[in-house]
Amino acid sequence: MHIGLIHMRHAPVGGTELVLHRVARHLAEQDHEVTIVCRSHADPPHPAVRFEVLRAPVFGSAWRMWAFAKDVERHAAQGRYDVTLGLGKTWSHDVIRAGGGSHRTYLQLAAPHAGARWERRLGATALKDRLAIAIEERAFAPGAYRRVIANSRMVRDDLRRRYAIPEDDIEVVYNGVDLERFHPRNRERGAKLRTALGIAPAQFVVLFVGNGFGRKGLARLLDAMPALLGTRPGARLVVVGRDSDRATYERRARELGVDGAVLFLGERRDVEVCHAMADLYCLPTWYDSFAFTIAEALAGGVPVVTTQLAGAAELVDHGVHGAVLRGEATAEELGLALGEWAVDGRARDAGPAARSRSERYSIAASLEAVERILLEVAAAPA
Image (cartoon, rainbow, N blue to C red; front, side):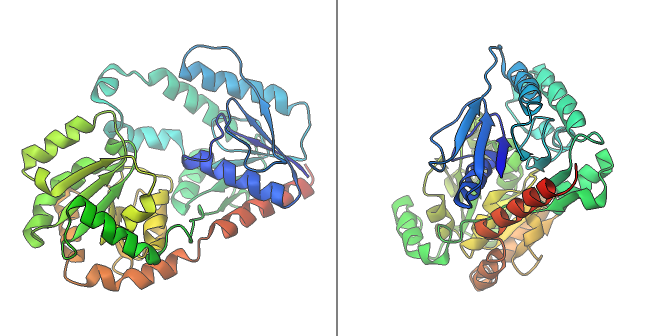
């Protein structure tokens, strides 16, 4: 088949971008003709993958998003493809992969905690948010799609409530995890990183990974650190990722008197080693349609403490692979959960079960499910 994959940006990194890269490569390996319709791109994921660049000259990220959606509408009308898969912020495709969930839900749950404070005060993203919602409403209007892929039950149920999507038209396909890169055998490399950071083998390490600390809930994790240190003196929180407002979080750690127990490492390319260094992974997110890092932690044999507002929390059985807290959990509740998992040996003993759970969600299984859905839609009467 000739398959069109649609997203503004192609790259081998980033949440949706990584999924696009992997899907394109997989489909090309299965001898499909694959075209990525985009505004910008990196090197092709496979020699047979082609690009169709739609780059209308407009100013500002909000209008670039809208212009790309309009360009895709005109391009899709030419009927070049047997089936098309849209990965976000367009309305002209046969199959929609709603990898980011509903933008309305993001605004409701995460936006109050996300971005720099000046952006929130001045409403700097208001235009982009309005346009994103307008695109979303057109994308999920009756007759605008033939099938929807959600990356969690949380997203599936939310989209069905908001847009009355028929049950048979939406399917959950969890994001696949790289089970070779994220593996308990990385523990030796993790031990070396501990040594390089001045962390002793017996110290309990909580890991946080994410860009955009506000939405990911770092503030309430910092607020929970005094309780953890009361339960497990000498514990450390290692923060991996970037945020333009990082200084605010460093200041908060100082004000709480836990700055000596918190290490900000910035962005790193060896995230699998960071997981291998950790005893427990914590992502107290305010909203993540999935959260790759949860699946990656489990694959590394590390139990997870997160909230019900992470789609990947559905992979975690509370009390077995970690803890799943309510979305509005307080810092006190979070600190209690961290303390319960910091009891000697509990996190380590949960490692095999965490790894076993992750093995159900390989990249191959996820990609095969996406291909199956595309084939089904292409074969069905329009």
